[in-house]
Image (cartoon, rainbow, N blue to C red; front, top):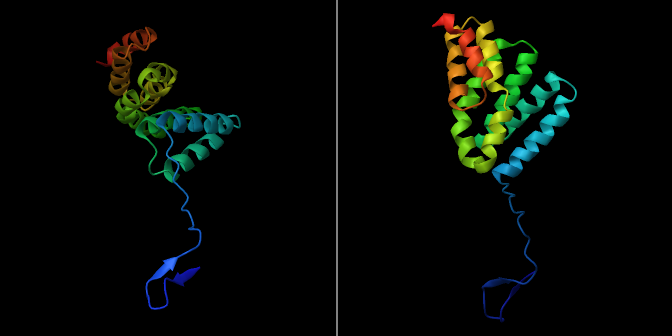
Length: 165
């Protein structure tokens, strides 16, 4: 209710409870990542198509999605697209994962290594580039995975592609 202070005063004053604006919820990168992992797990249970639908909605619908979370989301995209044998889409998703890896390392801190080792982007990227005839690109991914110490099997993959040098 708006009332007047004194009879001669023309200054209105507010005398009722004020409406509160809802405060925006700012989730941490780790909380946002957990939401993505949970949503993807539920969607992927039904196959790669529902997983891709969930991931596309998430990536398109959240403009402020942290880059670290985008790296994981694009890794899931690469994996689902590989299951569908959409090799060009796999390659594009892998490029987006690689572009967001520095942010993932910075934002996840100690959790970075475990998340990196769980990613399928190097395996799927090597597979996609080989399917597309880009053996030099596959070799580059092998070298990058070796540089990140992701396992000796990447050395074996690199050696098997050595003829493409």
